Image (tube, rainbow, N blue to C red; front, top):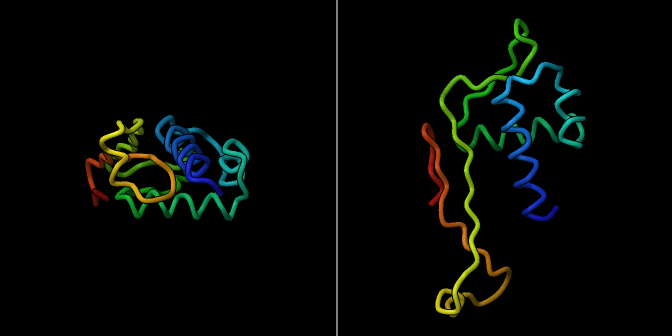
Length: 105
């Protein structure tokens, strides 16, 4: 899977959890267009980023137990910045913000 697809799935899942979308895990997976087992892998990735997520049977929804911000900023590189890149994509992830949890940069 390409990195952009993965980022988009994480972003859609994050928005559903923020909105407290009502539904079972299968409903979340359907909304994000992934399998149920993949859904739990993506939830684990969000947890690795510092999100405290659980499923509330009372609310019938996944919820954040902490303040969690999922923000990825992608910007194009100037010629000066690309001089130091030796291969792969010319993508610069300049900012990862997590209010509670580990920061990757």
